[in-house]
Image 1: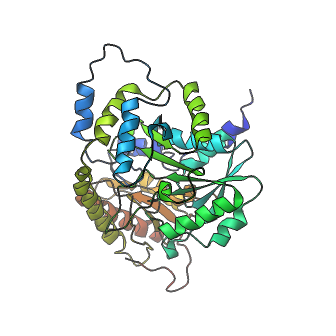
Image 2: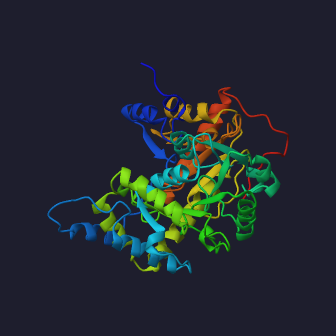
Length: 412
């Protein structure tokens, strides 16, 4: 039997594709430090669990396709704390942020359409685009520039008659970069000039460090009919398994369309929405110690990894990820080797190879993404194991990436 082209071409997740090697490493008795996946170890807030505990409906029934009214109102109130005015009708609750992105893609473009995305980017954008019949068109950012957006001319050169939207993630997964208001205003001008949508993946908006400011696309003037924002409780409230997100837009046509998508899948999970209501209603001070802890974790991992002069790494401003450039030609092979051939005192490290975060062939082969979602002492240990493993890998003749002298330096 022949499968669809969609089934044959969808990308395997570079974050999860090494899972069989992880299972085998564990079977051999190795302890694995997971730097590969953004699964926070911060406890889900007690308010979330209390709300579930007191959920007394005798039947766990379908909810509205656009989400429970109390949750939509809680999201409106949450955004108002940041000076962003939206209405309940601007919110559709989704099954995680992933569904919100899928709905956004399906709403703005037909099969054969294109969405421009700065790379490296969250790898599952590729999968969402494939399911929607779209193509991700990359505009490349560079580690040496701190993964800042390139000139607007680069974006404009990528626009074709098939382009329907530009998607940006800020604070960024996988780089940790926060795009400035000026950078986003530039993209807004392009969107207006070329009649495009601007989609914002803003699920890490609380995770900003050292006074860095997050600008929401919803704050940009003259963009009400062009902006779609993706929200989620997964990382914000350390509730990845709840699968509760939201699509937000002031464009009535967009919201009417995504409501029909929501009706086709019936409704987002009811009980988890009850927990989300309580989480969104928490005092904003909840984030203060969590933000401080992630900043300390970032600094711990940064110090550990930049102990090697062969590592290029800029200090992330937000989220909880880093793209790390290594003196290794093939980090996919290196990531596998760490699970199959390397251990230090019964421990090893799992990382995400960098090439899966790029759409341009040949890029990211000397990079990895790491997530600082472990306790500080574990991050310190993981950095040591990673660097020792890197040195052993290179000493074994596995292949150093050739660089000009002084081109690759550790950066803080």
